[in-house]
Length: 137
Image (tube, rainbow, N blue to C red; front, side):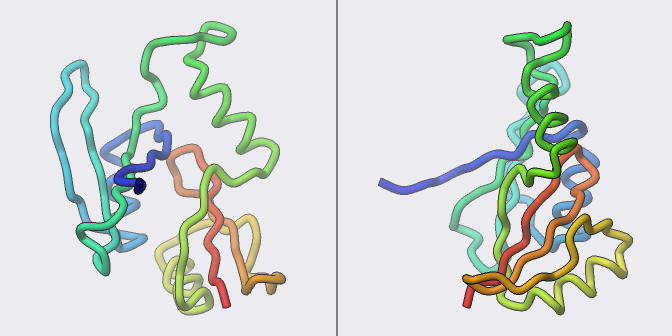
């Protein structure tokens, strides 16, 4: 068994693609129009083009609704407002990546901090999520 794709809920796929490729350095792998304005849109690490794909999944998909909003949007906002990262990305050079991202205007809610397993920082992905960036020892 393996993990071929994992997803992150985004409020705007075009904005997410620009952020995840131009700022974070991922590479677009799949871009398939699903109709209704949604795409199957994935990015991968340039170091592992055949590795796990990150699906930039629209958070406005119909389905279960809470207070007349798609449940995904409510869940994302709840996590964000509580300061809880949606997911984790890995790096081999946290300080270097942090500095590069700050130069691109990325807002960090937690600056690089040493942990029991290495170091971590938390940033806003501009698409409604906080993301934990971790460097493991």
